[in-house]
Image (tube, rainbow, N blue to C red; front, top):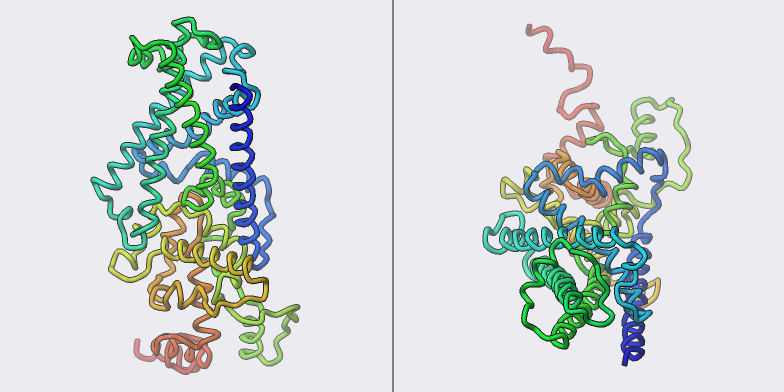
Length: 437
């Protein structure tokens, strides 16, 4: 019987690992559908930035209470993987608590820490469910979250409750079995939480306790493997991508826009026909971005890294004043369109065109025109996503490729071109105001 369970476990583990690897590779392939962008300079600064913002969650602590609750879940998720590793070894080898004899007292300490963090994560998970469903925080209940995103967030929280309850139940019944002297249940010492929660199972026979312990063991590990495959389809992909996304951040001053050398050459020769300009190799075929493949790979990794927390939208002055723009929706739309393009290419081949685009079919011109370019969304994002950069690329396409701009903007552009200023005054008359002083 034991060998059968080992084979079943190995099959479940192997298939889960293969499916997850295939999906993660598909996401990587989708990200590299974007244009090239070199973000490999200053490696020392990049490692430090990643340690502060992805590992240290620096921006989260602007609001301490949700930050601490999030920290409980995050640290629990990271540390509990030590016990998951042991469960995998046990499942394949048929052993029980494989690490215990080798680690001795440190094993008791390690499992006790995992139990404490699991208990704190359980409390935090209920708190997050309360905020989302009972308190109905505005940023967690906005239009772009209706349907699947809202269900996804709740489903993940419910999954966490099941996983944490399973591991606490497993340890509690295991501890009780140790007290009863059941075969194969080695002493783990006095575990911090299990020594008390084991009292919930007083009076139960050995067979019943083993059945509960084994059921909790299987629920926990199968739940973990299911979670591994669910993450790539969920907003919780940020658990993984927050790290590379923070490492490959753009170290540009906020508000600084990327120059366009081709346009700069045109402006220089317009102002001074004798100006010396640098020839541009491989000038762009079009300006700005209409679809996801016109964006850079960093834009696309930003989209996959979005936590859908809504801090960007809550800080957006356009959204606060009732405009259509939501930076969170910009990122969600970019990710959804990228998934669609990736699936189309996979199914129909590299030359397939679905005659759809990010601009128009997912994001409207009204949305991108509402942006004030204040950078509030960039400042707020806990995983260093830059929605503004995507908005500017889409806006640049509408203006430079489609000549699609409000009359007031076109007047300003004409004045900039003809008068070198936004106003309708001849440059020669610019200082006439002095005669009136």
